View 1 (cartoon, rainbow, N blue to C red):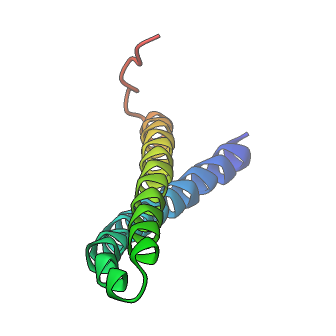
View 2: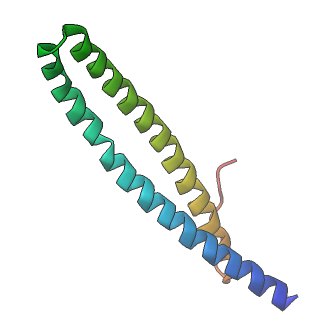
Length: 103
């Protein structure tokens, strides 16, 4: 029984480590999304070549930014929630009391 609980504890420790790395990666990706706004700000310059291209590029970069930010936001919150649950479970396994979660 102790061997099984030790395996489970190692599993949770690894899961906490992986989720922490995922959260950090998602934070970096969120910062990289700002490049789409820079591209959107520069896209009207293409209007000197063809007016519709400038507007089309502007709309494209804005839609890509909003979509990317939404996906990043959802994944960040999901990973943060899983991280909190894993940390609570690990704390409970280490002898601490798990705080009551709202139902």
